[in-house]
Image (cartoon, rainbow, N blue to C red; front, side):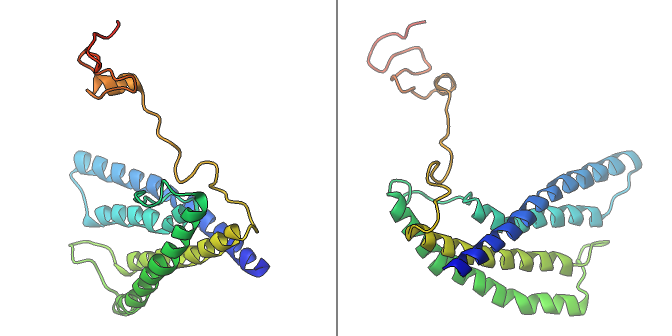
Length: 213
């Protein structure tokens, strides 16, 4: 198990570095978007290449950070069967989900994308929009994102087994899946919802009396 945990730590380090670096693509996309808007308004000049570059940058940030998001346990999940369970049961749900749902989906996606990507590279596929960009770099980023997600899935399976066997600590044990949302009761009242004391925004108490001012 020691070798597998070393592999997991290596995968985590690589995906953490790539995920954090990918966040800068958002800032770059903002600069491209702002520059394109300024040039279009001031000089009445524009190009589909600038618009497509924005899409590529946003897509790259999303895809290259998907594995890092899984590492940080921040993917959105439906907590109907998850949130109220014990932590050990949650580990079992995660392990089964990663093994029988996440990994097959990622493997199938990679298997289908590979010939699609090769054809695009060999043909030098270009955008159908006038003045657009070549497409294979964007498709390569898509494929790379799924490769990173595949390895992160392996890492998460290794860590779940190790946690359940007591070999490593559960990094998310204290906070659960997400940090609890803090809601201001006064804002709830202004929005027309009852606060925990049973008061509503219309100045009436749900128990039949007037609220104190």
